[in-house]
Image 1: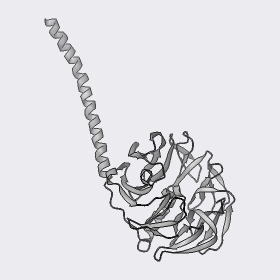
Image 2 (image 1 turned 90 degrees about the vertical axis):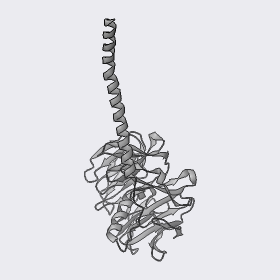
Image 3 (image 1 turned 120 degrees about the vertical axis):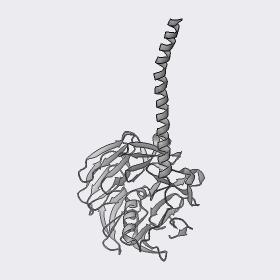
Image 4 (image 1 turned 135 degrees about the vertical axis):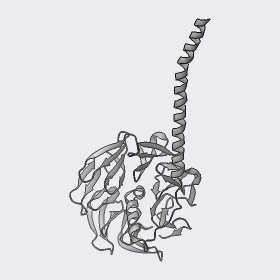
Length: 348
C-alpha cells in the first residue's frame, strides 16, 4: 500500500512539470497571437486618403510623385507621370502629351509615339517607336529629342545620376548615364520587376531562385533578401509588400528590420497593386476589375475597411498625389479620378 502511494506520488510529480510546461507554452502562444492581433488592429487604423495640391504643396507633391514613379507606378510603366510642374501622358493615339489638370486640356508634345515614362531634371525619358523599341529623351517644350538607346527597355527609372531599366530582350537590369553612354549590367538574370527607393534597386525575377535582390547601383554590390518568387513588389519604408506565388498570390508583407513575414490578405491578387499613403490599391478581378483600396500599415490590413474607388472595368492604373489615372480594357483612353474619390473624367 505504501509502495503504491509512493509510486502514485512519484508519477504525479513527474506529470506536474510536463503539464506546467504545456500550460506555459499555450499561454505564451495566446499572448503572441494577442500581440499580433493588437498590432494589426492599431496599425490598420489609417487616416482617410487625402489629396496633395501641386500648387499649395509643390515640394510635397514632387517628392510623393517621384517615389510613385520609382515604385508602384512602375508596374504599369508610368503611362502618366509628373515632372517639374507638368503632367505627361501617353495619349489615346499613343503620342506624348502634357495635361493641364486645371482646365483638363491636353497638348501634344511631339508627333511620335511614346510610353513607359521616366523623369529627371527637365528631361522626359520614354520608350519610342511603334514597337517601343528605342529609348529617347525630350525636354518639356518638345525640343532636343534625342535617341539614347536602340534597345527596348521596361521599368525605366531616372535617378539623380543614372537611367536604369530592364532590357526587354534579355531581362538584364542595366544602368547608363542620362545620355545613354557607359551602359553597365546590374543584374545578369531574367528580371521581371524593378523598384528603386532612392538608394537601392530591388529586383524580382522569373525564376524561383531569384527571389528578391537588393542592388547598390553605384557599386553593383547585391544581396538576396528573399529566396522565393514574388510579384507586385512595393517597398514602403522598412516594409516590402508583394504577392507571394507560393501562397496562391496572397499579399504578404516582410520587414528586414522587424524580421516579420505577415500575410496581409486572405484573397489573391493576380494583378499588380500599388501601396500609397497607407492604402493598398488593387484591381478586384472577381468583380469586373473594379479599383478597390484597403488601409495597410506595418504589414497589417483591415479588409473590413475595404473601399470601392472606381466602379469601372480597369486594365491599368497609376497614382499621383492628387488623382488616380486609369485605362479600360482594349483602349488607350485615359480617365482621371480625383483623390480621395469622385467621378471619372476622360482626359484623352
